[in-house]
Image 1 (cartoon, rainbow, N blue to C red):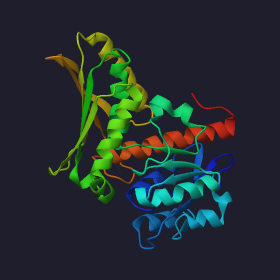
Image 2: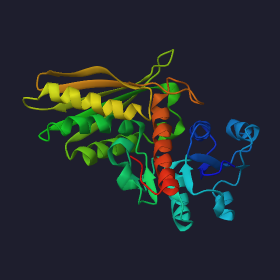
Image 3: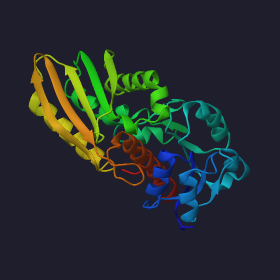
Length: 296
């Protein structure tokens, strides 16, 4: 055990949970107290055992039976499972970070509203599209609150879209759209996801469109660049690939997310941005517990 670190539990031993496990190894504030799921043959369980991390195949029951094993819980299971887990984690007094499409807790994008989420008992990471594009939509809308319409298109590699994504396409688009409206105050929004089967797999690519009359393009570009720089503090592979341009009443900008390649492939930036955001939230919560503050 690393003295002074806050213990985090991970429920779900698939790709997302295993990527989180590897990211926690670098954290100055967190250590993995338990890595738990249901599949004893999962590659994640095997890796965790090799790393000397405590594992279980009793899923959330392992935390119920030993509540002191962690203060923070990452739920990397599925929406249906999180609906069951959420009230249990609340009863146990755990800070739950939901990486599923369940949307039980408060929507959280670290660069936009992390501090106000620290008093919640359950926060939700929305979707990869929400994490990637809501900040850019906000960066535009804070310059132009008169934006009439915002639309985003998130294009990801088919190989990076697991069963959870494929089974929840409607939930993905609806949750992403809701996050755009929530963080910008613009009611008329839309989200589209495209699964691209190209080989080799493409890097996650997102385009943001905004209908604006007489936009201040210099101020918009500056605002977007500032926001992207803030996101790169916790998602290093985040970058603007097309600076905002204006044509026919529409502002357009594009961005890409390259993954860190911890466990997930680098092209799967759509998954990496979720795990990076989850760790950023957890570290802020841990700093609050260790240092008695709420981070930056």
